[in-house]
Image (cartoon, rainbow, N blue to C red; front, side, top):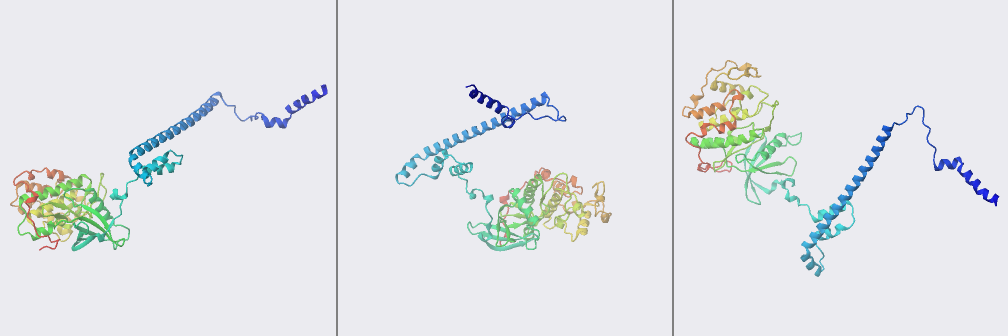
Length: 455
């Protein structure tokens, strides 16, 4: 008995002292190197705090995920319930003849089935279908130019050819401007992009309206579709037997200044104002057109090319090579148009830049540092010193105009750009309050449209 009972005891003792079995059950503590520092109590406390924070963050994320899933299930249940109650009557009629349930109810009834996130999104789209692309015209492709029937050629400019055309579906007569892209090597021309963008941003009753962009069979056939306007002021002034009345000029100037106020307040310079770019319909309303040279600007001003604006309407600072300019160049052009409306002929028709400057200097007098500070430092000022008398002869050209008319014209044609009148200031000028008052546009007479081929 004793020997038998002693055997397991000795076996237990041997198993407890076996080094191999001891390593597999509970490894001994690692011996610390003499170079390894003993962790301080603060470090141990920080490690414990970090572990607790990670555990709390993990638990919070799990809780939020569970709450989101619960909210989704509740929303799906509400959608299923609403869809079923709204279509109950219809479903009864359809189930009677075996036609099945509508798509929305079928999708709603299947929302309670377990599914992936992609499947739930697809089911949501079935319940709330995405509107068709036709609901967003800006996302549609351009129509073909073949939807328009060309009627006649109107004119050709530096950046495009303009035709009169008719919409085959609606019968509306429009102006169809084909952009010149045949010789373009760097993609879509920047001038055309600026024109389209500026016209889209300049929604005003006195700015020509862009209807759409249409394309032809090749990449170089791009057209801008605009409202067709019967006349332009240049051809109208040439064909009129008598000039505009003072009241009619006042109406035209007010409309032009209203359009310029919109552009300038939105940081846009037109840079090509002239009578041929002012269109006029038979209702006495003018429309500003041809934004090929228009561009946005900002403060502080950055250098821009001075090779803009038709020569007869170009301001002296541009003729002298000023690299920095702004809306003042447009207001000089407005002054030239104002004078042309009064005289019924171009006001300053120079043949080249030097002759244009000479005409300006002889009209307004030789500029000086007192009248125009800094003009002598402009690139072209050296060749134009002492070429004209010192006094202005503006009044001699407008002997029958009122004092307010002359004052407004003189403020348009001011040498110093910083002192030149703005569009908003011009609209508030006493010229528009003195008699005769501005005529209503409907009182303008109608004229044969050269653009429409009328005689």
